[in-house]
Image 1 (tube, rainbow, N blue to C red):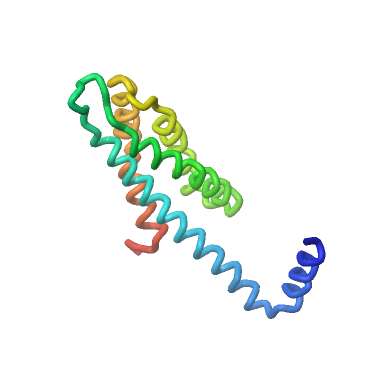
Image 2 (spheres, rainbow, N blue to C red):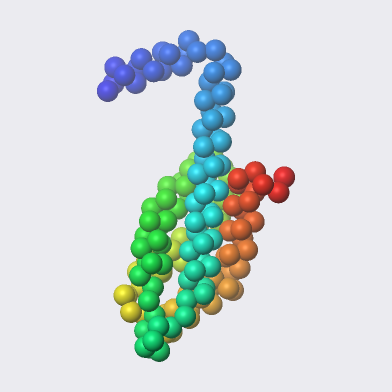
Length: 146
């Protein structure tokens, strides 16, 4: 592995400057596309959770889909947040930092959560205007609305 790293470093040193900046540009484009996709998925999750209705049993909510989806998004959110921090993309870093506790709360709900637990998360989503922020930044990150 060390020889492979040394070889790729030598190739980078010999590469034309345009090729290196193109790789960095492609990396930035990939980050934007991946972030836009993640934000769209997070928006869908927040909308879905916000619209949850009690099941036939008024004391039980079915949040199995939202829990599973939230667990998937949580790992991506952490990785993208660190990337945004490293790239110094502060608005995206702040947004990802802001939704992480909500993703964690949803992922850690019991299978049949109490109405108060669901309501408190719904209220946070509404109060923090998370759906609107996700919609705005996913459009911005994907290059729409420019």
